Length: 275
Image (cartoon, rainbow, N blue to C red; front, side, top):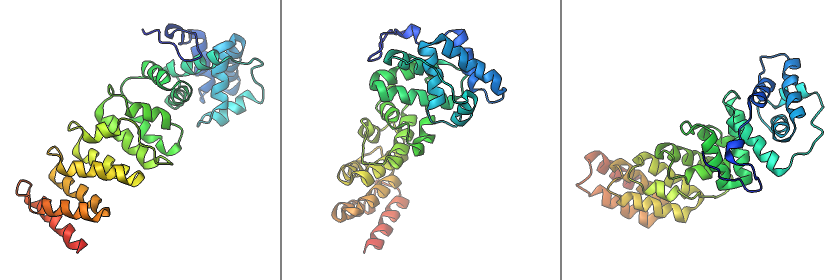
C-alpha cells in the first residue's frame, strides 16, 4: 500500500481507513431500514470517538445527497461539539470512501469532495479506495454538477480504460456549464484504439464548446485512416459550419474510391443539401 500523503494531512494511507467500530457505526447511521434510534446510536458513537470519525459522520449529515434529509431527521438538530482539523476532515472523507458497506452514492460523493480539496493526490486516493473498475458512474452524475473535477482527473488518467474515459469525456462535454476542455480529450480523439464513433462524438462536442479547436479535430478525423468511412462523412458534415473546409472534405469523400459506395453516396447527398 502506498504511503502517499494528502496535502495538509499527515496521516499515512495505511491509517486512512476506519476500524471496525467506526465503519459499522457509519454504516448503521446511513441504513434507512433501521429505526431512527438505532441509527442515532451510530452517529453518537462517531461523535464520542471524535476526530476523523466524528468528521465523517458530520460530513454525511451535512453534505447534499439522497440520504441527507433522513440523516438530518435522525440527528434531530444535535451535532458534534468539536471542530475537525483539515487532516481529520480529509481522513473522514477517506473513511466514507473506504467502507464497502456504505451506499455507493455516498462513497462517490466523498471521492469528488476529496478531489476538490486535494486534486491529483485526492484522485489517486479515490482510485486506491474505490474499485478500479466500474467508474462509469461518472457518466450518470454529470447532469448533477458535483463531479466535474474528479471527471477531469479521470479523463486525463492514461491508466484508466479507454472506453470508459471516452464515455465520461462525452458526458462531461455535454453538461459542462462553460467551455472547459479537459486534458486528455485530444489524446482520446486522436487514438485509433478508441471507437471511431466515440472519437467523432467527442470532436463534435468540442466543436460546440470551442469551435476553432473542434474544427481541427474534425478535420483530422476526416483524414485519419482509422476513422470509419461513414464517420468521416459525418465529421465533414460537422465541418460545414466552416463552409470551405467542410465542402472540400465532402467533395473529396464523394470522389474517394477507397471508401464504400454508401459513404460516397452520403457525402454526395450532403453536398446536394448544401447546394
